[in-house]
Every structure is written in structure tokens, then in C-alpha cells.
Amino acid sequence: MRFMPGPETRAAVIHNPVFLAGLAVVALLGITAGALVVVDSATGGTAAPKVVIEPSTVTPGPVIKTAEATGVHGTAKRTATVRSTPGTTGPPLGTIPIKTDVAIDGRTTDSKWYRIVFPPQSELHGWIEADELDVTGDPSSLVVATAEPPVVVAVPTEPPRPTPHVVEESPTPTETPLPPPGPPDLVVGTTPVIEGGKPFVTIVNQGTGPAVGDLVVAVFSPDRSRLIGGVTLPATTIEAGRSLDVGTGIAVVGAQTLLVIVDPNGTIAETDDTNNQALIGVSAPEEPTAAAQDAVPPAPPPAPPN
Image (tube, rainbow, N blue to C red):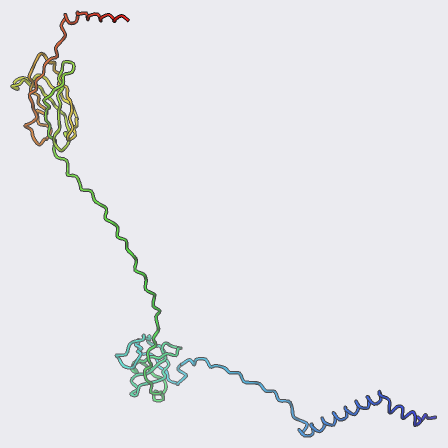
């Protein structure tokens, strides 16, 4: 038995909102699928997506000039000079030892000079005389080159240094050297001193230097016929301008005149040997009399009454 919905049931289903929304989704999917089929048919159905890679920009590095750059190279026959310009008057850049291989990349018009890479493995050049090299390769294939301007290396200059300020020191005053001491000059003072009944005479050094040595003082009679006495002071020094009192050792009896001579033998070098003597008068002191000794001093006067 098969169920068949009636007209009312079918009308209710058609007007149901859920049914209508599902029908709209099915219709939209069908339209999308149809559009994809049309596009695929237009492109042949086999095209693959293209991948585009942007090329990166690479800055090329320096090209090292070697013998392979031109196919021409040389070997030094002997120690050769490399110059900055062709010709023997060109400023020298250096030398290359014998049997050194060099890369040649240029020549002069007459091919008498070759331009080489110098220093090796650099971008600089130098010139060498063709007769100095054994060349391998065809030199005529080389370009005719000209001398390059010399490479100038700026040497940094140091800032000027400040000039040091020199302070002149005032000269140290020098002391005037004193003249060397001169010889002494001994004289006898004319005023003796009597002590204990014996005379003492004064010996004065009026020279400019010290009197050093054994000092002898002799006492004679006035006519120098008789030596009365004397004294010797060994190793004695009397500085210039100084004096020394010397005891004669003789006893004075009454009043006498004595001739006193200092350094009578002349053992001390002096400026003047003629003034070493002097006549002096001496006298014994008076002794008190017995009457004076026995005298009794008078009694003091009585004190006045109060």
C-alpha cells in the first residue's frame, strides 16, 4: 500500500520556510558548479599556476687581473724594476725577483714596454721593459695601454704641537772666591804683663795667613850679647789677626830692659823678618815694708749719741 499525500499536504510542504531555504542552497550550488565548468573549458583544462620569482640584484665584486685574463704572461729573466710609466725615467714602484711570473695586460705602441699587474693579485699596474721578460702568448693581442695616474695616499698630518714655554731660571750668584791666604808676619808687643814676678809678652800675627810651627820666644840683654831666657811652644798656630800671650820664664829683678825676639832662627816663613824683635822695659813690683805690715789701723770714731 503506497501513501500518497493529498493536495493540502503538498501545499503545506511547499510553503514551509525550511523547505524553501534548503531549495535555495541547492540552487546556488548548482549555479557555482556550472560556472567552474565553463571557465575550465575556456582555458583547455590543463594550465598550471605560474610561480614568478623576482631576480635579485647582485653587485659584482672586483675582477682580479691574472695572466688568464689575456692569455699572455711573462717570467722575469733577472731582477727587474717596475715603473709607474713606460720608460727608464719613470718613477720606480718596486722590483720583482728573477723567475717571477707576472700577468701582462697591456703594451706600448712599439711593444718595448709591457703593462703588468703590480702588485700581483691587485687592480694596480706597473710597467716593465719587454727585454726583462720571457713572454708566453701573443703580445700583439694585447691592447695598447697608457700609463695610469699614480695612486696618491693621503698621509694624515698631526696637529701642531704647542711650543713649550721655557721658564728661564735666574742664575745662581756665584761667590767670589777668597784669595789664598798669604804668609804670616809675627811681631812682639811692647807692653808686657808681669805675673808672679815673671813677664809675659804678646806675640801678634799681623800677616794674612796663619803662623804654624814651633814658636820660639827668646829673651836677650839689650845688646844681644847674652841670652837671659826663653820658651818654645811646639806645634803652635796663630791665625791671621790673632795674638798669643807667652810667658818668658825669667824672674824680674828691679827695673830692666830686655830684648825679646820671636822666631829668632827664622823657621816660620814670614813676609817681614826684620820686625820680629822689640826692646821692652820691665820692673819688679814694690814689696810692702815691715813698718807698713806692723801698722795697726786706727780705731773708728765713736758713734754720735742719739
